[in-house]
Amino acid sequence: MFKEVKQSIKNFFFFDKGEITLKVFLPDFNFKYDSEYELLIDIDNTKGKLATDEYKVVVKRKLHFSEIIYFKHYDEEKEIIVIKEKAKVGIGEQKNFKCKIKFKDKENHKYNSNGCHYYKSLPSDFFMPTLDGDVIKCEYEIKVSLYFENFVDKSHRPRLIFPISLCH
Image 1 (cartoon, helix red, strand yellow):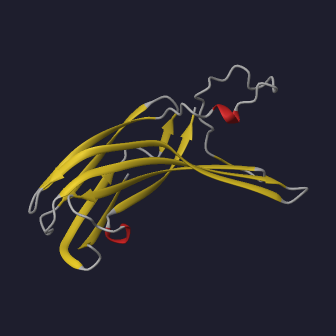
Image 2 (cartoon, one colour):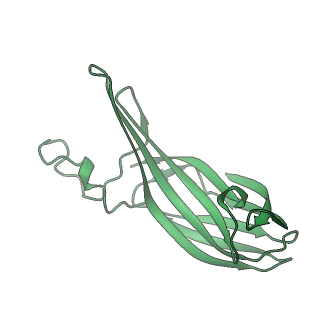
């Protein structure tokens, strides 16, 4: 699975700095809890006029709880994994990078209930799997963003978002 974005770069909102291509290759869109995977990131700066500095990989969980009887809703988004790696790609260069992701959440204990006997044996770093129901919806995504040696605003920064499925 891969995605590609060609982004025109503007330094300090209006100085044209050419175009950069960001490609990200995922081994799959279905990932398993407590497993390690490798993303391949290709940065093509052959048409760019500004060197890159780093990339950021974020795995985000989106939860939606609905109480059907009382029409109450609860939404939460949390960045559960954040990886920043140096990725120096000079003007006129093209480079590839590998990023390893370990799917483990160390702060997920708030969804494990000690009062419920079904969940007593769950580890405190248990991932809620991807699911889509009337009462609970849990989605995951991987976002890869590219940063530069000088300021480039959010709207001109290349980024790719992959919806993924997480299971046990």
